[in-house]
Image (cartoon, rainbow, N blue to C red; front, side, top):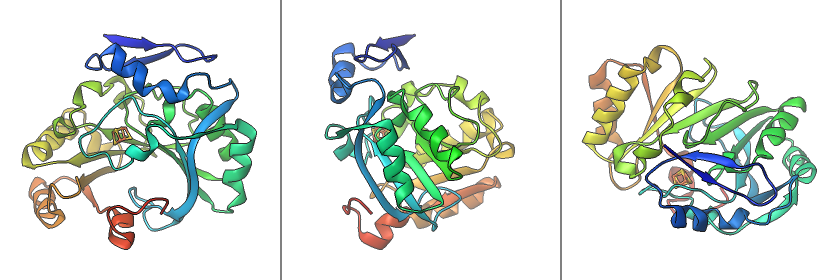
Length: 250
Ligand code: SF4
């Protein structure tokens, strides 16, 4: 089952996730309403260190798009749910390239809610940049340029959004993509391990596991990872370690 959410002047967007009441969905997508075609609603563009992928530690430009149709219990980017600046696609590309970073991550919110994100990522790849996409995996990834590395954030039960996972996306992952689980407790971790095994993910892509901030001790999570015998990669949220849990734009 899916919910079809119309967005102004853009093709109809099909969003899986039967759990989202249609009035909530409409409210969550309101920041994108009236957005002219050929533009993006951007929350912020900034430089920092890549923190949550196999490229962690490298300088990276982040293009954070406004709005998300989900509400994960541990979300630390709720500031991107509402506020944003409508910017023509060409200008977003030029602003992202102007930083000079070789690595650019497109994130959100949920970046795939805006159709112009697809030509944005292709333009950045055309310019020779390494492009990462961080997505909830709750929107179809099929149209993503194959040059883009997708970091697919599989939602665990503890997130409160596991019903939104779009299983068909898992079959579309390339060896250069990555899958990430943010776990809220031991049950969540066990669920993630069962999910990795069920879909044979550990032999297909790097699998990242991180602790929901303040809910799981990363040291304990490290022990759980070692128990599995799987090649899971423990992720620490680098920006929280370096700049504190509430810092933004870093
Ligand atoms: S998908 Fe990402 S941005 Fe959206 S609510 Fe979940 S953690 Fe926050």
